[in-house]
Length: 135
Image (cartoon, rainbow, N blue to C red; front, side, top):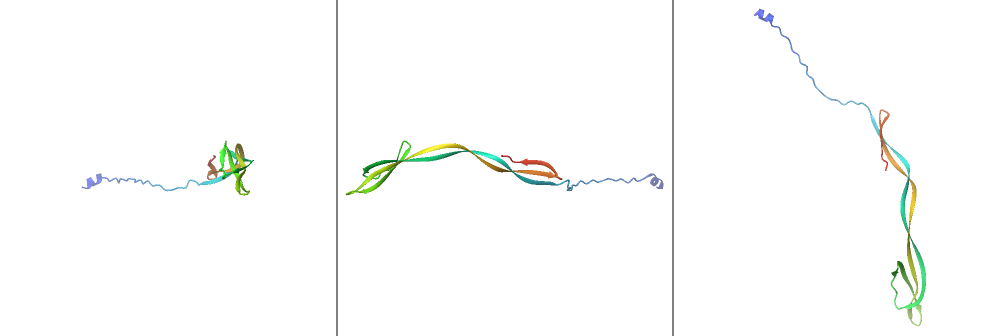
């Protein structure tokens, strides 16, 4: 048996075992800031203006009751009455006010300034991207 022992040699086998993992590593810094800029702007708008022209028309006649206001050809007619003492009370239409409506349109420009905010992203002291909102 000793001869057989001498002929046998044992070779140890080795095996590597790998394990995979991950860890957080800081590769740089990023700073985001916003910048507000004022930009001049000119706003245009159409404005409508209505003006009234009042005309007083003397009438001077007696009426039995107070006339109702009415509209004639786009003119508002408002009766003005007074009581006068005669032997009896009578109602006189003293005058009518005629109110005409005139409409005018004008373009106006108003200078103003508006604020615009944009984002600046910096990595290690260098600008990476600038995104702005322009409306």
